[in-house]
Image (tube, rainbow over all chains, first blue to last red; front, side, top):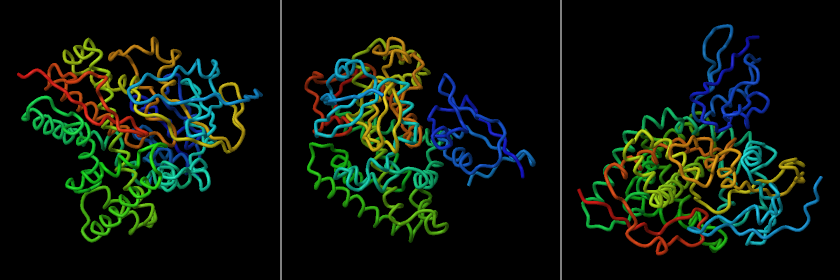
Length: 74
Length: 399
């Protein structure tokens, strides 16, 4: 099974904390209230996909490690 | 565990009045039980860290707060069918359908259209004799035109929405039957509009939602209709009155306005500071604990109503130094005016673009913009959950 690489662009993050609420344990806020992944590489997880698709600033990127392609968010 | 015995009386500030001193009311407790003017006993959560924790933590449920038997007549009954009153997984499914239309990127693409709308409204005001009513001429039509264009609602129907929206956003002072009648009017309007869009789809959000229903069965007909109502109400009185209350703050701070005139690049930061400092509404939506939750040094038992006092978060000295001072150069973007977590305001990015373009236009094109009446003569609509000005008479220096 493939793995997903999770990253958050902190320059784009608007601190909505949508991801932290949707996927607790997967994302965490830093002192400036910007989000980041708890683990940079994870097994595919629909809740993380929901979080990426729901981010109001599209700051979350998911990449399929085996193909190097972005994960489809739909 | 603290046993927090008798609730203290808490009355949210009336529009135009200073906020009550929370530390005095609460006896310095960050989380405390309070009795509201309508007799409800709720827990109030104060301070940046506590409010933030609460709005992100899903053990504080919106769905339970508006469930049958708990929801008050009117807005809360409406909210129960909307994303505003849902928990996952229903909330996630429905919010994802509209989230893409409101992302920072999509909204940025609307900026030229928003700026053109701002300029058109200012042109019309400048063509008429002073004083002008900024509510009727600018702050209400701006967000209303923008959300109507996004949804695909004919601009000719705007007047009907103002009346419905006024009634629906009313709070406990309003007859619940009136609110239900207004909701039925709004709902019926969209039932008809959805039918006509279904026959003749256009490049708008309602047509996209109809496709999501008809082609992919991703939402029910009722969810589709309620979503339209939610977006229209949410994108309307809120932004309009954020413009109003922000301007009232700026009128009291001419030095800050001078900074923005000298350097319009400060406007996006100023919008965040104005969002942080201004108080737009009375009570926030309630949530209900799904289990015992420890917060702010107390344990709130399961099944209790809880409300986050966002203003106390935005003026928490641990987060914002000298918090009562308006400083347009401050880093204020971490304010909680749009909430956070699952129910972070869907239209936050749109509101930001509208507010930025509104102040760019008003400050840039109407020098010396000022109240044309004493501040004490300003009237707010009665009983509104959002502090809505009836009128905002202004003058400016003719070129």
